[in-house]
Length: 408
Image 1: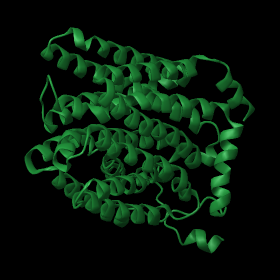
Image 2: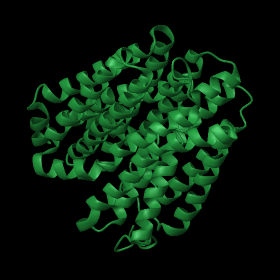
Image 3: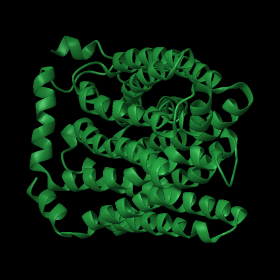
């Protein structure tokens, strides 16, 4: 075993250039699952499908990501993470190319699901940063990579909206494939090999997820609350482009994508949420974040009473507010989860994000159906209620998470 360990190269410190590369890699790979959202109005028109059908594009992407987290993310504890990053990146490039050359909706849906599965490489990059960083700087390293990941999620909408508006939606998928390929080559050349931390067989590795879920109430509460919050978040972003495309706004993909700039403000505030979690406790931050999200989603219910221009400004302000609440809650939930069992952080992280992206897939599906049947006000109501439910999980019972963590 010692000879195997010695064959791996370990870096005593994490240089700023490598940290930036990991943050860029996390951002570009996770962005792949969001590029389609501002283009949905354009996609539906060009492919000749209804709003309900085109809504399955983000739904299947989010579902693929959730399944990939469950089935593939735990492999980072079992195999060399450098190889996993390379293989998944190659698969993500192929899925994006398939989407760019898709002749119709059926092939695009297949490509969307495959993109979600492979884009889980972002969740291999985050623990890679945690492993490479010295213990004294581990929190800052993970926070930096997570900021890159969150910016990738939000700025992807800006980029895809602009590219689709000027060069067409197929160009966006091709550009995305090229960017992933470039950053994958750079990471392969920069990263050392990672020794496995467990010798569990694949079945036993997956079975351990159920054991972690059963043992830790704090983990269950975090995954449920983040999933409920993500449901409203996804319902908004997956239907925004279609809503803006129609009356009374009649705006293109670039306008929908520009809303990502508002959401980016929330991502940039993630380090502040981390400091608040250290000072006031992560439980307090989860309550603040979920309450903020519910408040700003509820404020959007006033939109029908306002003029078209005022409604747009309201949407911008609310996007900043609920994104800030969403990201603050995520950072606090990660703080809670990573403190449960440090030796199983990759698997704990997988469970948290499975809950989150399952909620996102449900939100994308329900949001598209509600928009088609009852309009934007129904989407807003769904987001408000799901956020209030997340707040309820964090408020009741207040002592359950503490007791579960203490017993662990």
